[in-house]
Image (cartoon, rainbow, N blue to C red):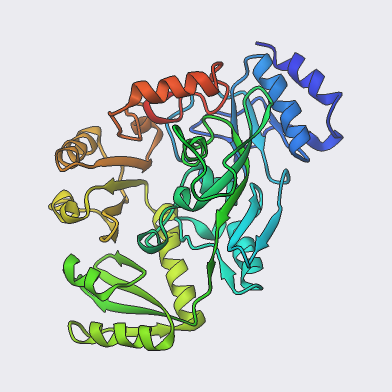
Length: 398
């Protein structure tokens, strides 16, 4: 492995400001990279990856660096690949209801641009207020709107990526049904940068509805009642329930009327409702202020059983998705995490350690998955045989 050789070759082929000294902001789990590469465009990105891979270096791609706490402790970290300027394209096609978005475009910028055409990207992922398209799509992040619009992975039609050896590829065609066998684009959306660098995604978009409302009520509703009310999304934060309704005015008012028959609620409309919803689902307070964050995923009907007796300091539930985020101010011991994982596993779910102190992360696989690890390892060996990308950070330490 020769970092000096790779940098010397890269210096001769890229712009002068594309190689930087590392700063504390690029640290991942206590590890500092030896160099920061800052490609100007996809061609420079390809050149960099070709030489990084050839010299056996280990790289972690990033854009806004808002989610570097996600993933296992790296087994190697030579290069921070800062994609902050590589591809900021925002190209909506409002008639075809699709859009093409570059890795370094911020999610908020995308939403603002789409709003000019009365369109939106129908996702509300954690940390949306500070996330890039690259971060959201590479990690398949989504929120309660997935109940109606499906997950980030599901709305993706095509991805363009740079492979570890520098090859520029495209997966998907822009059609909803476009593959037989493995759907490669779905593997990349959610791989957290462990297979290659996704630099562009083509996705479905949605119309901005005529009316948006968010109803807030104290306490929680029965899951069956909640589903009968037909909200487009539901989130429960520390015991307070928020139901989002949208559509034509008559439909929204009808749903709110049905809600009033089962519970009293305060109702927000329009921009106020939208601002409240995206502030809640971004969960900035949870990730900023709590030492440990666990994500529990179960079948919908057993989420309550999975969380029974668990005393978290901050709780976000998405009942109709069967998901919950638990925040703890104090560090957790491994026995607690393993015990919760055992219980959730018996109910058909799993627990991801989204954020935790370093001494905890060093002793567990944060992803908490035990099935299909052999398949995932084989996929990694095909796409990234040199373990160049995010080495050790993904499921099973691959």
